[in-house]
Image (cartoon, rainbow, N blue to C red):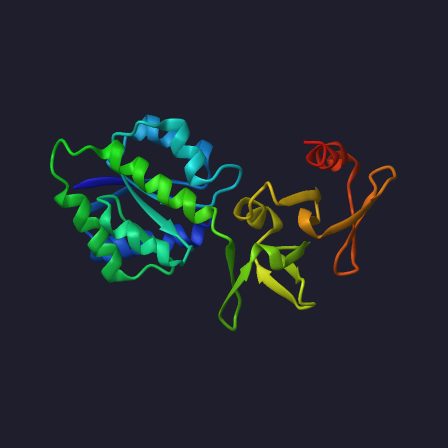
Length: 247
């Protein structure tokens, strides 16, 4: 029996994976659930699982930050990710596997099988570091995938001008003039977008630094963008925003 912890910031995803494991992977016993990095670290210390199902995007810290903090590890890791790029195929060559959301039964069983077949004394940490490098490279890709009811759209970072919070959704305004409403909070996409290029200037706005035409000074001020729109800079974010252009 393999004792496992599931880490995902969406309880629905945890529930689905638990049911799949119970129905199709009886060798795995779920002994804990976590929704963020802090909860995960606490459970790892107290429960000492043999296997971690780890979502890449979490509130506050992503999977890479978490693993950098706790390395070296003495448990197996199966990444659960919504990233769908050709680079993911390379991860199949690692002893540590990944599952692409929505998780298929066959992929789940295959991943668990790899954990069961892992030979004693395998250099787990070396393989994990290799996978982390691949996943980090994935985050540095020049495109983002946006999921809508119609399907998946792939956009270059350079095409994104402005991201606007709309409750549990985010509106992407593109250089083409098109805009797209996507499920997911602004905080979620802040973690996905490269921080050297995309600036959180307000609780409601993320802007692409390369699309800023002018900054208008004021208490917080506001920016004028290449698509003709303006976005307010909050007082709290002003110093951080201005420091980006002094580097």
